[in-house]
Image 1 (cartoon, rainbow, N blue to C red):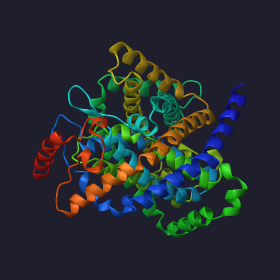
Image 2 (spheres, helix red, strand yellow; image 1 turned 180 degrees about the vertical axis):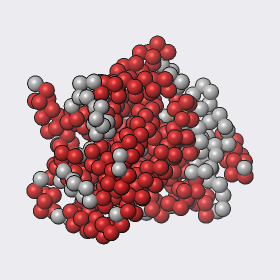
Image 3 (tube, rainbow, N blue to C red; image 1 turned 60 degrees about the horizontal axis):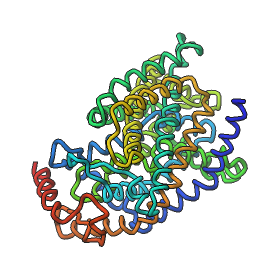
Image 4 (cartoon, helix red, strand yellow; image 1 turned 90 degrees about the vertical axis):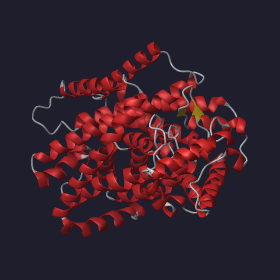
Length: 489
C-alpha cells in the first residue's frame, strides 16, 4: 500500500516539474529579466548597499531582518542534502543548472517581493504584514485563488518541508556508531521539535530576532570550512569544472532519462533550496519597513544568491573537489560527511551534523512564520485565537517529530508537489501584476538619478489608494524622514 502511494506521488512529482513547472519557471524568469533589463544583475551593487539600511523605527522590522527571515527559510538542509542528492543521482551537471535557475529566478524573487511590499497590509499597531495571498487576490480578482495558494503554502511549510527537514536532519546521525534505526530518528525528532516549540511559543518577533543573529554566523562558518576542503584539493578543481560543464551539456544523457537527469534534479533541488518564485519569501518581505517597495525587492535577490551561488555551490565544490565516491548509496548527508572526513577526519561528520542542526532549526522557524501569515489570511485577516495557535503549533511540532522516521521518497515527493502547487499559482499572478512592479522600478531609478532617497507614493504609478494600506501621500513624508534619519545614523 505504502509503495503504491509512493509511486503515485512520484508520478505526480515528475509531471509537475517536467514539463509544466520547468517551462513556467524559465518563462517567468526570462520575462522578468527582460522587462527589468536584468535588474538582478544590473543593480547588484545597489542591493548590497540596501542591506544595512535601517527601518527608522526600532520597533518595526528592518530590511535586513526581513532578509534574514527569508534567508533562514531558504538556507536549510537543502543546501547540504538537496545538493548532495542532486549530484549523486543526476550528476555534477546539476550544479550548473542550479546556477542558471538561480540567476533567472532572482528576477522572479525581485518581482514577488516588490509586489508584496506594494500590497502589504497594516495591523492595528501600525506594523506591516502580507505576502502573495494579497497580491494574488488583486491579480485574479477573487479570493478563491488566494485561499488555494494559502492551503498549498500551509501544506508545504507545515507538512512537506517540516517532514523533509526533520528527516534530512536525522540522516546526518547515520554515520555514528550509536545510530539505531528503531530509536535514533525518534530521539532526534523529539529534540528538534522540543527546541522549535520553545522558540515559536514566543511568537513572530522572537523568530525575527533569533534568525537575524544565527543565519549569518552559520552561513559564514559553513563556507569557510568548504573553502578549506577545496583548498586542500585545489589540484582537483580543474577536473571538477570539466565534469560540471561536460555533464551539464550531455544532452543525450539528459533527454534519455529526463526525470532523473542533472537538469531536472538541478532545477528541483535549486528551487527547493532558494525558493525563488515559490511565494514564500514575500511573506517576510512584506513585513519590512522601507521607504520604497523596490528596496526590499532588490534585497531579496541577494537572498537567492546567498543560498545558491554561495552555500549550495560551497557544498557542490567541497564534495566534487574531494574526489570521494559519488553514488546513489551515499546520496544525502553521507556524501558531504565523507568529503569533510577526507580532510578533517572524524571532526568532519560532526561539523556537518552541527550545521544540519542549525540549518534545520532556522528553516523550521522560518517555515512556521510563513504559515502564520497564511492562517491569518484564511481567517479573514483577523488575528488567530491563542487556543487555535497553540493547538496548530503543537500539530506542527508533531509533524516535525514524525518526519524524522518517514520514508525519504514520500518526504521528497510531498515537499516537491506542494511547493510546485504554490509556484504554479504565484508566478502567473506575478506576471499579471508585473506591470505594477516594472513601474515601481522605473520610479525608483528615476529618483536615484535625481540623487534622492527614493520614497514611494502609490498614486505616482497610478495605483488606486483604496487598494493599498501603505504608500498613501499623507504617510510618505513620515517614512522619508525616518529613512533619512536612519541613513544619517
